Length: 253
Image (tube, rainbow, N blue to C red):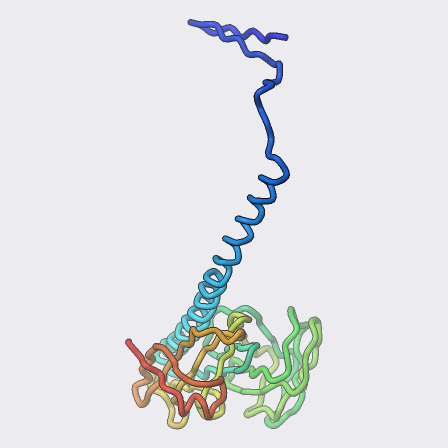
């Protein structure tokens, strides 16, 4: 069968009859191709994994540096103390009374007196694991002592540092899940005063390590009294406060 197509200047004929010269792959050829693809994938996979780990570690470092710098700017702008709480470990999070944006917002729906061990909140948009430290907008700090499920309206916490008024917000920023964070900063909190300087006892080193034990290790140093924030490469064994103190953070800027 022939299909005829007219054109303004020429004519073309296309045959719909299948070509008898077209051949597919043999089974052996297909197996060889699959084997080659498998070998190339095995060679490339470690490189891609290493690249992914570096990306996650650098992301955690940059998020933390940006959060600290934001809190420092807000402290100067509004002439108040800004606290950044660090939830360390493999579910690392940041919380501050001076964040403008966040991944999760927790709102107190009832007042909680100083040293309270329970905070009533509006329904949680996502679960919060035990050990997470929250900083509410009034400056009150509390750490969860039990897991809080999604939609929960009550948080079991360590004794609140100050009273928390109804309507106050706590903002959480989650770091990449493939990174473990550790620090030797006292109480795992950095506090900037109205001048943007760092309060005594809240300076030190924060380190970021891939959870799979990769070689990519990063660190951040907060120094006093000016609250300078520098980043660099970390050499240390594991992510514990002792290791952070004994390890070396080689900063470049």
